[in-house]
Image 1: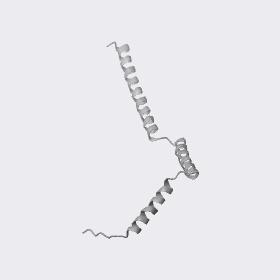
Image 2: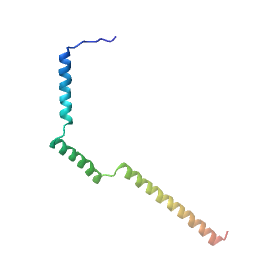
Image 3: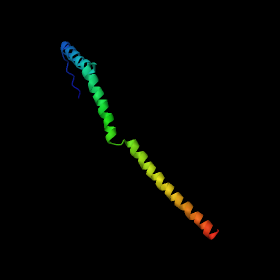
Image 4: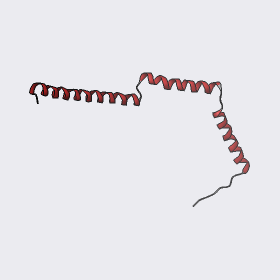
Length: 89
């Protein structure tokens, strides 16, 4: 069951006007908001000096995988080369 309550038009307009004032103040540009945004960006970029990003961690894991793969392939090549030289297959 839906219950509708009718409110006074003046109260409704006053409420909306007050909310619009709050939002306008929140979105207003000032020296304070500019400094807050600069410090937020600075903090976000400084954290990258202290830790690796997810992308860098994945690249590191990729390089380890490729290095191990290279060692395995090199070992197999050495074994095959050794077989051809020593056993003359």
